[in-house]
Image (cartoon, rainbow, N blue to C red; front, top):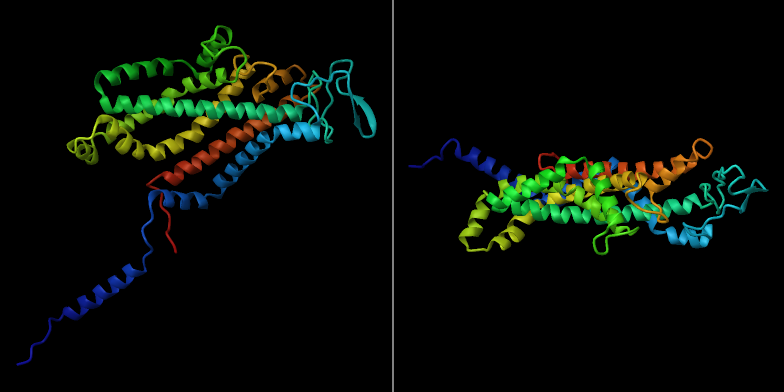
Length: 343
């Protein structure tokens, strides 16, 4: 007697074959960093502003080339009694009434001169170098110490967390500008070791210290959650030391947080440095920066408005480009973000 197969056998076999064929056609799985890069590539606005900041960075790095081969004068070279040709006629760099020449659109004084006869374009590029250098150093200080205190407080908890949190609360309680002015003036007048006088490390350290709580507190909160996860318990069961758990298990899981914080802190550091320099507690003469250029240009308004407008535009462009790119980077690293994966 012949046996017949079950009615649903053929149907289930066809479904299984169809699912198997569909699974074969699926693309291989992507890691979180490659997936984030795909999201970022599709955010053209963020990439555009990232390119703008990169262009500003390259121009500022080429400041010595521009000063030597095009403008033929340094950032501190004064030329109050000199003349420059504008429209085929000789014109005083600084008039007898103290008004500097405006933009000439030539190789010399391309963006005009300041009240001391110094080339604004040269000082703009050198000021950008100083502002960006301070911003990068301050960001490195903030990220390093913010991660250090945040990981220690969140991992050990107890008295360690209490002491670190109270110190961060004290720094957090002061407005950033007020605390920056206080520390900047104290270091500029008294100094601690190499941190004294008109060195660029003074505003860099001041800005870096001011923003430590802005990184330390969020990192502490994230570490408090990570230390209760199963992989941390497994690491403890394997006998790993506290230092090894923090460096090999916790820090790698803070990678996306660090990447997001870098552009955010960099933009705020550049902006705070400009504010401190404008108030006289940041970069000290004769070193230029965008903040000191704005402060010097205030005295020549409205006769020479370009002395305020030019560094102001550069400062806005730099900070805005970093912020927009940072927002795009944050969205790309957000695991809740959805992206269609195609071959």
